[in-house]
Image 1 (tube, helix red, strand yellow):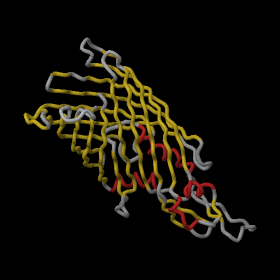
Image 2 (cartoon, rainbow, N blue to C red):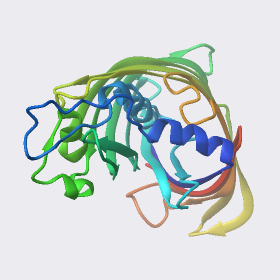
Image 3 (cartoon, helix red, strand yellow):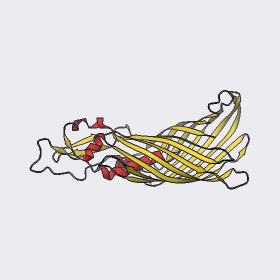
Image 4 (spheres, rainbow, N blue to C red):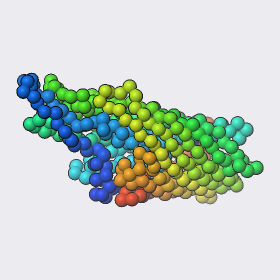
Length: 332
């Protein structure tokens, strides 16, 4: 059964967590290039060492390439402006073809939008350079279910994962640099890109007992995907290791009501993620838990496009972070 879900999630951080995000998103000048005696009439503006922050960029991208319900959509506000400094979202799904041919396929598309502020200088003046960077990533997975009992409801599932991502820098944020001489770092900030590919795998233990009309799913997953940049702007190179563990549980049972001529079921969910590798503490926390409750409608009597629709409200919490979400999922 194919399952696709999308979640809209907003986090509210305390000041301590905002500081972690700002440490990653706000770049400061560490050194400035001096202007020599033969300086041109148009001053040369030099920017921050963007290359040193490329690993941080890929660390954020790793949240988009790793299938994860807890962080399927995440927003962090800038403490100074009150506007979102970081928004992340992900849509994904997976399914096993059949019990007789247990090939497992999964896919996810994720993205993020954030606005780091850089400082540039010509040796005499300093200018704040607000920017907009957009991440887009797609991840696929191919695995196989190996049953561990006679009922075949307890399986171990190794998965090969592959990812492709792109980071784009918004040129419109640097209008004051037009017709000025700039270094290669500002060239990237003004109009650059970073492409990355990822290879790795996951190991999942799944338990899916069925006793109609009740259904229970329990999954424990470890994911490790190595991201490496390629063919990008000359100023930017980077790598990151996306590692995480995730525990996911879901219980579904009838409410006693009928909707669309089929039983209406209630849904209870639990998801807990621990972020390792490059993701650890990059946003100020390395664990995130989500609790959810909702309803599931069986649409088999009215349409063949999909078999079930789930609407689930979730509450997420972690170290210095809380949030709420409303998710929509389809089963085919």
